[in-house]
Length: 334
Image 1 (cartoon, helix red, strand yellow):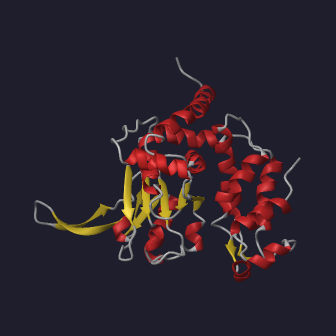
Image 2: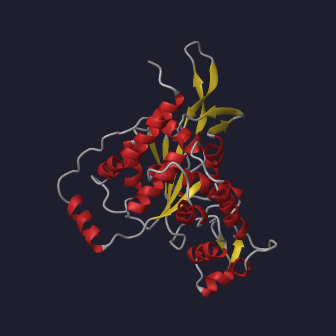
Image 3: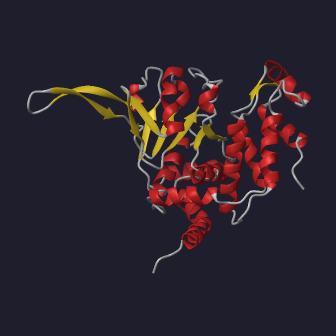
């Protein structure tokens, strides 16, 4: 018996909703706490976006990414970004190969970027030239080498971790690269009780293995389902106005933006804000987006797209505070 597309979509939505607790249950085998971090990562994966995870060393960023790739049963590759890393170490390189008949030809050897989930570990410890090797792959899902384009397998995610830029040996990511990340997720130190639980868990027996819950085909279907979630035009306009209000020097820009912001959020910010809101609605068991979805996700969506100026730094005005003021300035639809 053939199942209609509508019924397939309905079953997929029900599966997304019911699997939320299963995902947390699997992750709890190796991860303690960090519920907001996990939820934002899941939203980006269901929406098909790349993620930047910012936090100090030793906060289980790498372990979290690896565990999520295991749950989704996706091929996983990790690149440790270092100052001497070259672009070819990421994308691959051509080598001269000799065949059995004695002839020689150039053969492209694929790099670790040819995977489903690429963990770019400590991405801001390598110079901008090497960071830029990811740009084409993140946007076009392809790699160009020696004039030949190689398509990446789907689904494809870049989950990058970075240390706070105040730390030694870091290179700030270019704005064009930052804009290709759907979210910038902040991961912080755990409360004392959770840290006690981590120490107890990691110094006793090995944790149970994580069981895969999905396949790559499931993830591709989830991407299609998320895009079908309806959004009222008033909410789309709300997201666009939030992004527009963050840009200094424009007519009608708020005073605090002109004072404290050097560069604001572009159009991609509004696109990712709506796409993330759709994924959050489905995960929460709703068939539509509301203003709370947008107001919650504006922080991971905007925090790497708003560049605070010198005056903000001098007066202690953080990007988080600027986003707070944006939410107060731009009123949500009734």
